[in-house]
Amino acid sequence: MTPAKHRFVILGGGTAGWMAASLIAHRLGARAAVTLVESPDIGIIGVGEGSTPQLKAFFDELGIAETEWMPRCNATYKNGIRFHGWSDVPGFESYFHPFQTALDEHTAPAFFFHTRARRTGRDVWAHPDRFFLLARLAEQRRGPIPAENFPFDIGYGYHFDAQLVGEFLRDHATAALGVTHLTRRIDRVRHHDNGNIAALLGEDDQAIPGDFFIDASGFRGTLVQQALGEPFESFASNLFNDAAVAMPSPRGDGATPCETGSTALSAGWAWRIPLTGRTGNGYVYASGYLDGDAAETELRRHLGLLDADVAARHLKMNVGQVRRSWVGNCLAVGLSQGFIEPLEATALHIVHSTLSGFIAAYDAGGFTRANADAFNAAVHARYEGIRDYIVCHYRTNRRSGEYWRANAANQNLSDSLKAVMTAWFRGEELDAEIHRLGIERYYSPLSWHCLLAGYGQFPDPAKLVPPADDLPLADVAKIDRFVSGCALNFAPHDELLARLDRS
Image (cartoon, rainbow, N blue to C red; front, side, top):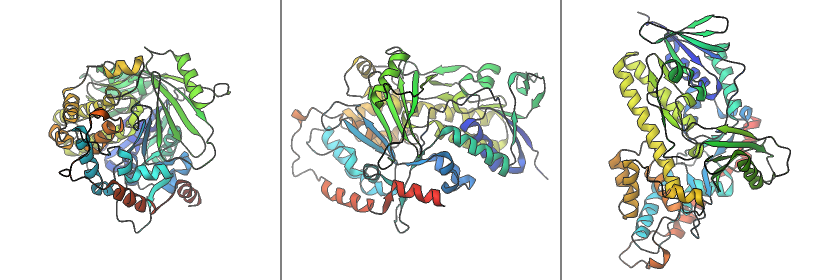
């Protein structure tokens, strides 16, 4: 017996909407008829132009090769994030947060041991950069694609033009997956008697009916928040930043970086996203400490564009999440679901994990209430787990200035984050505490160690003592040689990008 075909209607395009259309059509196949409707009058915000390795998993599942989508979207490879100026501690003014690789199993234990030794008063090397391959690749501007005989799996992300990715997925979804694309302004919703959504209505009163609806309408939250009245839970007490200003700059000369740059400024941080045709830049800041004009001036000065004729875009950010992502017969994805500032480029990661979890729940039993409750609890916990890791960046910063000291004094912390920080400062085994809390699914012990060690969150150097013979330290010079030798298996980033263009 052929299963019933459900009509999925997605409101909103952009990367989130077209990811939803593509994944639902791909996974559900003949069981789903997918329609995406978007207004020609509503633009795409496009603040985030970086990803985690989850985006590779998404394209791999759809069978889309890097040679197909990366050149069209001005994409480059991303080994991780370089943090500049988040700490004033000598020797810790900068650190690199790498994506994880299988090779880390050979170097991370030594890093963990050294950080604990330093936290308990031993004068040992505990800066993360010397311990990880992707930090070395980023330093040498080598891409994350190894030679064929390299025996370790490498995790990596991408930098890309968000609007072009949305357009690419639109073309793929409509041509290869049979998604129907409608360009229409939606101004109201028709409800069933039980409160669920029955149809979307445009200015011409023409109805777009569906069985299930996906809200990808951005910060407006047209369906889940406005039509269904789901409350929004703000993270303003945890995360102060609520605005951004963005502008491009020329690509520049020299080798293309393969890392995202995050540089601390007076009331927030500036991102740097290297693309093939330009560099994406922006300043995420707290409007309570800096107004928009001052933020733009500071960003222009930071970029050397103070007198340049380059337009800037000013954006307001609604940081937090809806209480439930799946409400009735509607699922929120992207900015309508929630937003955590783009410090760790998690936006598309959350979109993908939300859709994957929803489709799994649908496969397990359709649209039952029990599945929705379990799904919502998991999504809510993921947002809070990611939020805590981002909050930790600000709470443990070691930088001067009113904004930064206010963040360091912020006591609005979850019990989970308090437990992580307590374990670190008491010299306990941080990885064991992270596993006990069950939060490694959001950020691994490696990520937490890199963050806290990268800021130099250790006892005052004057209080450290040389390690005694009882401390079996790793040979950091040997690790250096090992990582450097492995790096030789990777081609320069620009060479990899040139191969994509030729393919």
